[in-house]
Image 1 (cartoon, rainbow, N blue to C red):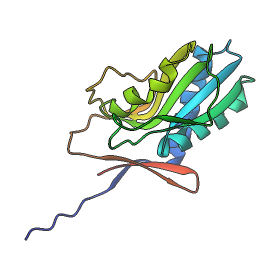
Image 2: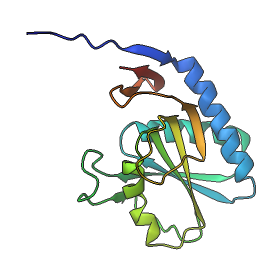
Image 3: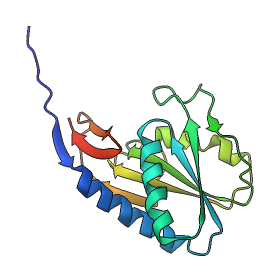
Length: 170
């Protein structure tokens, strides 16, 4: 019997991630400088912490009202699962920033759009910390922390420890 050791390589440390998130926050502000309010819709899991940190950085440079909601979805099986917004808010006329940690195929994000399609939102923009560039669905990120060219066998892991984010490749 063969045993394989999975090596975990840190590709971006917490200090670098903080700078990346700050840059993304400035990009969001530049595109939405005239907005009165932005709704950050964070995908369940690590996306929520990425969104929280984006909001924190954006609040330092802008007077735009910022709100965080969580998009609860079963990432392993998104099609049959119900997508729930927590808290449930009125989104008509609002700009939505969908946030996730890693964009791989786009499957999770595409199914996460469903609650926003039932309301007349102003626009939906996508922000991801890592874009792996393996699109299977027509989802592109408007704001990318980093782009990684990886194989389908490699796994990108975003890990949070005491609100510090590190990115690993396995």
